[in-house]
Length: 180
Figure 1: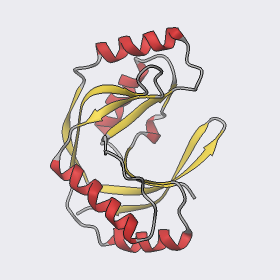
Figure 2: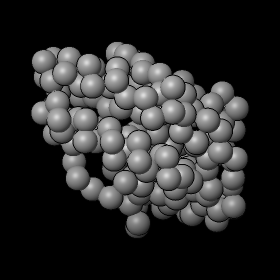
Figure 3: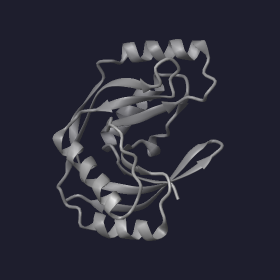
Figure 4: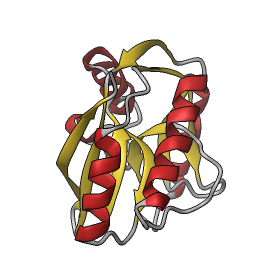
């Protein structure tokens, strides 16, 4: 099963991020209810490993983490694969990412070791993006480079199942964990 552990932005942040994504006007916008910041992604997770992880996450109590945003960017330099809002590199956010990745490995779940770029995806692009969409994306990034949302405390993380469908990923929350 494909799963990930994520933070959900606050209600106010979610509304602001949705309004920001609406301005892009190309790509496949992420639905408001699906906006999240992935802390750890697991391509293949067994039920046993998820049960072990569940027990470990129940004990995770680092306190609320501050989540704020500064600017926008894209993955894929020449042809964007996605556009996202960049999260502030708050020390608590980075520490939470590191701790959760460690707990996943302790539960024998494979988590890719790559540089953590904290972000919330606003829109995704198919492989065949048009030159007009590339230009529009560039203009969007330039016009919204100073986008900011002040940090707010986030009090829980979620374990979410991701099911791939022809219309895109479908997310189902399997469990929530209070950080307090």
